[in-house]
Length: 256
Image (cartoon, one colour):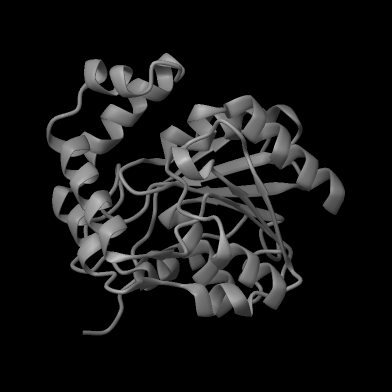
């Protein structure tokens, strides 16, 4: 079956006339609304910030296939209001993997990437854990359960996470794991020709991007840089929102 892109709904922050535009692509089981903390902070710094609901999530269309290639094809169609590429695209987890594929495929889509604990390559054990967590998040976890798991999260992050998981299609959440077998975008990551900065979570707190694969990627592609955010788990923008934003701010400052 031929790949069919879907049109993704947008949520936006800031001044539409701003010359600087940023796109954020959320992770599995989340939504555009869950990007609020970083998008609001960037808008306060003068950016026009956009986030999208990925296929099968939030208000986005449902579809029959949920490969990373499908997510990438969708976000390639999301363009800034000004002419030319996005100034920067921020992606989390599978959203980061999708941004990698989109950038490798369409060289004019983004000028640079910032990736939050990108899910570049997952082994079967990790894929199975992701599948289990997505099923629990959709069907069993309410505010009380998410609060118990993440007591330090902002209350709005907790509520929005619950809302996003329930709004997503369970079929989509399952297929996003099952359709990506193997789950591997290392080849596209090695091919990137634009500045790409990864902010990784702490390995013992659930990082999906650390260790030898990161070191190998950095050695193979000089466009990549990396830092590990101490004390942050996989959802580092919710675990450590201020520190995550400061890391992003530093990267953006170095590129201006």
